[in-house]
Length: 268
Image (tube, rainbow, N blue to C red; front, side, top):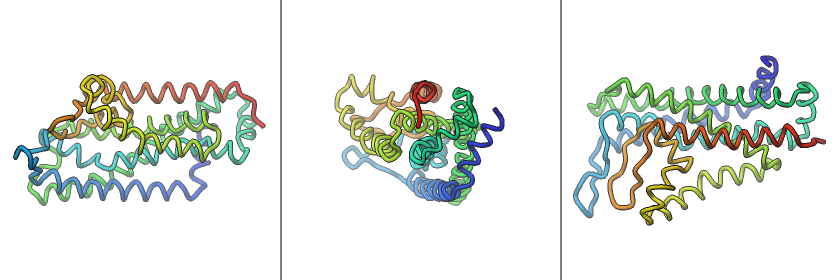
């Protein structure tokens, strides 16, 4: 099992994608943290009411700054998850993988464990960029960069979120063996379809309170306990632990269905 996990990590490490993704996720974390540090430490006023639009404690503001790049990070981890298995289907190397590890369950479990580790690694890279830049700007603007120990919980949960999104990508990559189609469907849903659906459903009270908050991206944001924007149509987020459970459920269902399909289907 250990050798199978090492093999999965080696498949990523021996390509140029791993350091390209590392640079992208570091830069995204740093840029978004810097931008949101300026935004959240300023006065954001709703012109229609004259009231502050940001609703959150000092801890939530810092959480939002340090995890501002999470939306880009989970799209990159979704991509990695899809490509970790999709590239094997595309290049016909999945047969060699199953021959090297005849017990398919073990081979697929190795992919799952490797992706959790890969997600944690990229999460640390993201946090190195976001915390270093965010903490510097917050300090310059007179804000305590670590107002409570809850910050550490949010940082740890952001690592978990990235690992779960990698598993979601794995499930999508297996259920849609065409890698290009899997990437288009996965990224298209997370980046385009879900935000549009969220906005559309937010105009209905029942859907806003009982559907929107359970969507994957909404659950991801709830995990890190960020600030919320006040105003009509705004979604009341889940608690951090409920968000973690919801995102875990998505990962378990999609990755589980993918593993079951890969364990039974014939490969050329």
